[in-house]
Image 1 (cartoon, rainbow, N blue to C red):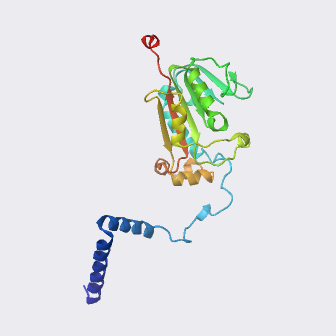
Image 2: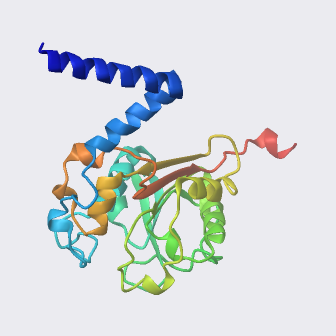
Image 3: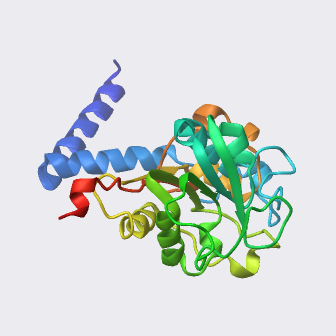
Length: 266
């Protein structure tokens, strides 16, 4: 080591010792870690946006023009993991594609739509649906729909009412998203968080462990989704990283309580 190098090392050691004495060990470590993180970031004005430096998204159709949208990656993975619950008499809101894709031993497949479309078993607004029978369904699937109905609490009450005791609702709602759907844009009332989804369902499914809320997404998948990229534009390992500060999709599995005969007498 040269004399100049030794002098630099001694100077740095002196500075380090001084910083430790002034800040204290814990604050010094925090400051050092912050400095390291800042040093690793691109400098201000030096971020390379590449294809993302644009004022128009790459695709305005959520990614459908490129393949499977990123939110559908999370939705379909959720339903695949819950496929054992998609059985018996199943009601799907808006369509039947997920009942057909993930259901097993389905004894009857019903569909509810707010409009009188082909294949609809029930035509109703879920916030006020007296014609949909109570205590009927083993499973209800409602994907990316709850947020376009203003009275979400009434919808969750209806979902609880129409489930059989022991039945389950599988629900997904958007977190970070664009609002591009021309059909639903005028009624796109809400975007939810993990906390709001949990509270919304627990107020109706109000018994221990009845509601399971999960969140999927991270800063990369959220950015990609906003630009309308498809799931194949990212790696599976990138999609599957979870960061609670960047929720792309929120999922809910809520089960209706089975009331025993002796409980009714209490």
